[in-house]
Length: 439
Image (cartoon, rainbow, N blue to C red):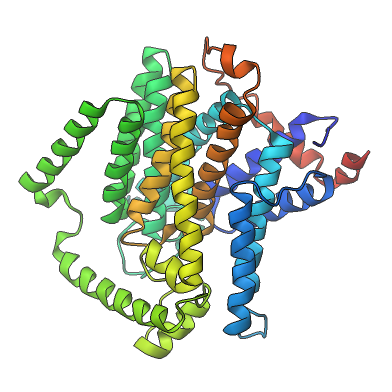
């Protein structure tokens, strides 16, 4: 494990990674590359068989094989296979970074996610403000920020749906699902009454922001995530009551479903995408087509371009074949198993809630993925993979290594403060002095 003279630098890089998720889809790849370079320079304990590192390496090899049998190129002559190989390679290095270099216990992870949850208010605020037609805002400094998010958006300019900081309304909704679930988590672990009230209000804010995105699949994902989160608390009767109540509400008041007037037409478009994607899968069922190349093949077949199959499992199948789909399903099943084992082995309510929150976000994004493919995007994909990585690492700390603290440590108070924010300043200050880390 690397020994830094200043631990704040490690924290700063990790905070920058989470901060990049909030701001724009352009920053997460930059943050991942920085962390990947730092990991390559300073790590000396490489893992090839651990989990989920083995899955990421498997996808890297599969991407190379898939590109070999189905070579494809960008317009500038760069092979498309570089993108998935680099993506899964960076996820592998991120796992090594969190496991060997950051090496946080669950309380430090808890503090990180509480800070990340508060940062989500910025995303919700941008989403809500995008629905406000107020000339004063456009003439202020905030107007330049809104212009930036308006310029880099990946959907119809005529759409009235908010796109937040993600450039797309469905991707913004996927991010807000995660923050809403973190609000419920904060509600259960924060101690003071005013903190609980604030957590409940932020949940309402995030739900309002989801409504502003106009995403229908997001509500499905949020409901699934809430049910999983309550289930992971051990309250089975409450879980059943919650599920029945929400289902009854939709049956009695179907008008609460956003954009009901376009529901049929949207489903028809989705069906065309799914049917053509399945035909492409049948032609490349072993190793797939790879991301981006799928869009090229879809254009040839259907006459119009789509980035992905708008279903997470169909998307994995068509892009990485049955081998990739098997790897992905195995990753999900192992994550579910280890999250449950971690929750059962934890000796404090707060740690159990942390395991429940992380797995609920994972399942919620998969639920949303039945109608979309959000985990392929830089921001949502990073949220998803970070949850998976942390679950596996904390499972090993609690259930495999079983250090002394795992049996004796109890939480007396929530270690929730803003001291880590200063690490970002230290990161920027020492950014051009990386060579000193080698000493």
